[in-house]
Length: 119
Image (cartoon, helix red, strand yellow):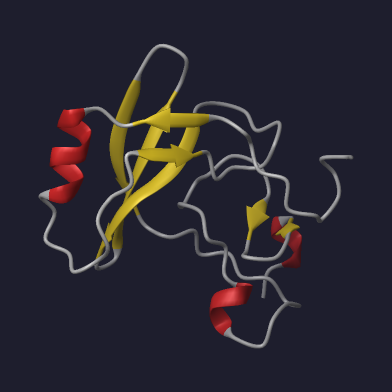
């Protein structure tokens, strides 16, 4: 398996949120489902920097949990603006589903791609 393929291979790292992190995310004004206490990294296998998982979305702001082996924090981001040229029929399947400024390739629900493939 190569990390240069378009196949979705996400990082296997996981985090269990502590009580303070859960309370913060549960306290956000949102009508979304309850927050999961265990999350998996949503970045591509072999990424650089800290791990990241979407914790909650409030309007245009996404609250991402980022962590390393020694620390974790919750940070506000907006969606990555990248959009692939080819892809599924709906816009959602063509948009990058990571945060703006994320490391590595862009990622949709079905595949990875490099920035040069954007519309």
